[in-house]
Image (cartoon, rainbow, N blue to C red; front, side, top):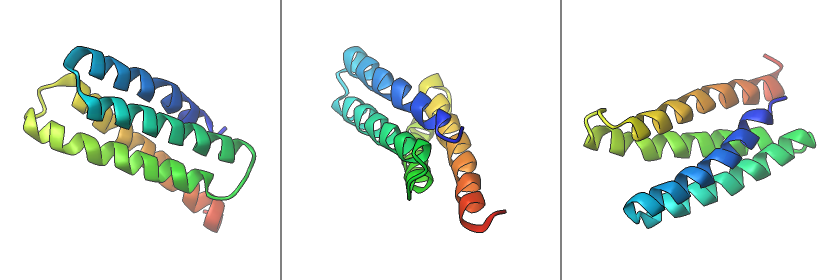
Length: 108
C-alpha cells in the first residue's frame, strides 16, 4: 500500500507540469513535472514489487518536490496557492516516506 502515494503523484505531477507550461510557458514546470512524475512512477513500481530502494527514491522525489516549492513560496510571500500546494504535498510525502524508510530499514 506504500506505493499508492507514488502512483498518485506520478499521475498528478505531469498534469500539473503540462498545465503550468500551457499557462505560463514555463519550461522548468514541464520538465520538473514530467521528470518527477516518471520517477515517482518508477518508485511506486519498485515498492509494489518489494524491490530495493523504492521508498528511498520516493523520499528523494518528495524532498525535491518540497525543495522546489520553497523558493516560489518565498517569492510569492505564501500568497499563491500552487506553490503552497506543492510545498504541502512535498512535505507530507517526505514525512510519509521517511517513516516508511525507517519502518523497512529498522522495523520501527
